Length: 248
Image (cartoon, rainbow, N blue to C red; front, side, top):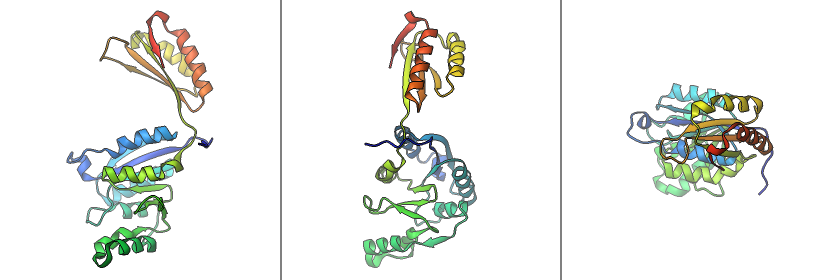
């Protein structure tokens, strides 16, 4: 597989639905997409959960679309009164909502005489929207600018994203981990020094209270593998060798 060596790509997820905010349903889509984007090399920068309110959808999508390379919406697409994501995305991008002939044809062919107005409403899209993944999907993914509109049903969300996921693949993240029995307080100065000397590497520390094997897991991550290895060498020099449980 050829991996695209491109500058960093950033993303935001906008989860839409009163049922998520009031606890009637548990969000699974953002959790799924977090892992997918990481494996694709895309930096997830924001997750927003908002109600089925047109103005809030429009504002959130507009802000994320302007700040990040990709925006993925989850939920609010359907035939009922509270499915207002399409109009919200259209307003965010200053576009009209129009009926897409290709989608209308798909709906009429699938439903036949049962293709009434509520079903045909599923062909309404932001003007100039693109249909993505037609070859793999019965119902393609809707892309308006850098906004990808996905359904809220987890099974459908996953299948649709998996059909288009490779279009987002770029240089992967490179990471290493050190597990130490030192206390996090005793590591603070060393971690700060290594982080300042290796700005291209993101360094995180995570205390462990579940087992006696180690006290802190330290992670080093960057798009540049050589930078990770240099930071790792500097980190290992700063730690007590006898207290290093293992590295990965």
